[in-house]
Length: 385
Image (cartoon, rainbow, N blue to C red; front, side):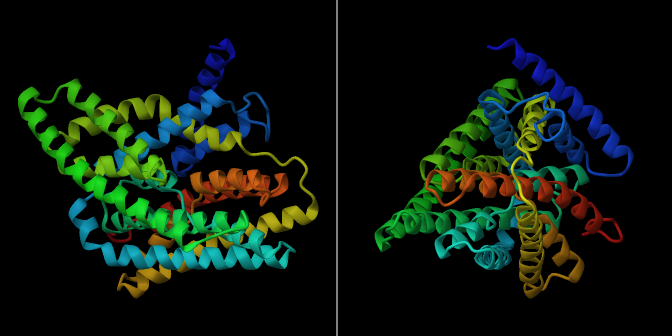
């Protein structure tokens, strides 16, 4: 191990905590402080820390633990009742984002496949950022928080399907067979998740009775999180969906509170700070022209407005009041994991150049900053959501 890594991690943890405390002092979400730490320490400003593979791996583990905790804290009964609204909210958000991104790119001279790909980049929101913001405000288990979480998972699935289709188009061929295989893999994964989840639930109930609340139970809980993450990835879905489902399986289990308390410690102390800082470390303005900056500003505007309007409209159609609809739209506005992964794959296929990749990273940073602030504003306690 490089000795430099140790000082980098020390700086990350120290800067994250100091800036999180400062942002809390001025009544902003603490997550903003963690993101600022990455921007300040990274290439965008001081250049003290350069993103590397080890930091990226730690950050990925941090995301999985965040989503596992979110699943543990979910109100499963409320989630089950909200299936229809979740579907509509997710669908409208995806359609508006795809259409907005396509129209913007096409107006700036991108060819049709490239324009579609730009739209696809905007389809999926960030579960991890929204989870942290809602959790910090104590709204993760609220009626609106539950519908947001469910819609985010559904939206991720739609994004994977669309992404698979567009990749086939970019490669010069697409067939009904390819689309069918993608859909089949998703269906098989959820069948697997139900069977595996039922077995795991009973196993944890048994272990909780036999051993009581011991560290062994929490270790098995985290192991189950990583196993389900691997399974989701193997079936072609984002691994964070597997982590969330693992938490969801155990959310009504007698061991839930104990597992949550133990996993939260390792996440809060180490993995989560590294994840949030890693986002800021990706920011860079190198090589952007005036035209690129104009495109970036419009790209960010489309990213935010498409989710706020599309998902908010979906909630309103489903009989949520105006305040709740705005909360849902705000909760779907952040982008993080999916756009970065999509942009990297797009670069490998020649659909994304380095300038567009930089613009995608800037969009991720800005929406990640903006969304928690917006969520705090719309969740202000005039009445209980």
